Length: 461
Image (cartoon, rainbow, N blue to C red; front, side, top):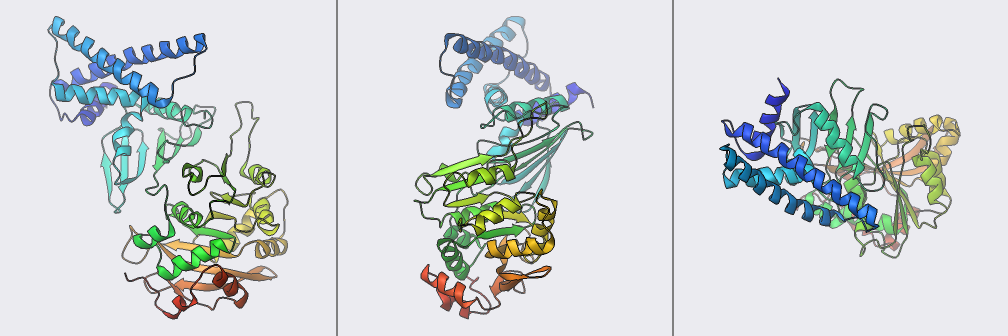
């Protein structure tokens, strides 16, 4: 397929035109407007910089771009009229100007997909676009950019505007991860693949409470009471599960039970928890984000580095978005040295498998702890492991399936009790008795023990 053909397909898809003579006219108009307005925006930025003026905010930049795009569209239409060219209908012209605005100050061809709240994941492999909806459906859509180079340029531009720092995307740095303004997480690669590839994972619930998770069916009334009490009782908690199972959403729900007067330090590879966005719930939050090395290989800041730094920042709780490497040692040290109530997430295939995963990470850390030392550290630091799964017959839903209470370490094993176990449909039901010491702490924090009396759980509304 030629570059021109691909371009016209993209233009047609994004302006609602199926085929016909308008398609080429749409492509010409879009490219003309984009080049003209991009130049004017660049001139404005240069003029502001030369005059020492404060840079435009994103809303100011978008408002200016909207005016410039409309002026350029009017000028283009007048030119076409004088030349006897193709004039587009007002409806099509409006869609073209909206697409140009998205190109310049929005998300380009991704904008319509990101505006569709029913889309959960977006995967782009060159000109092949696949989306997964919240109800589990998977669909292939039209290309979002004309060429592979345009896709690279789009991701490079979005990464540069991602907020905390500019993230490079080129042959020297072929992997990039960043967060979009709406909280969606972007992961892109080039050069190491035949065609550039982009994956966008969206969190439908940027803020969520335990009560809302119960209403969504992620947990039942007993688990809601248990989790709220566990957070207030300052239990150290790891949320585990597979990819895209809702670990971050669960972590947000747990954090909703943290008293607002507490100081939180969050640590992530790509900042997406966004606890500081809600000043009523969490007014004192410092969000730390890992940093990649520069082109000279200098300046990298790892998650492990940030955990150590967090301990010097007077945190009440340290929250790690995802534990996946050598940060496990400083995190467990933090949990066992007075920062109770800390939390994180981890990829694992079962609640029991979390301990094996933690041990594997610890062995790979600079400390090189053996399995016995690692298990002692884990047992002294971690109180609860929460495992999420998909219930049988409901692939679009996520539920709490298992909870383990860490007891101690014996040799090469961490001893734990599965106090909530998977039921017949994988939804968690009461399992082993909660230890007396733990139960007293939870009851003091508001847990209602009578909720454990239903062996099938309280999942039915």
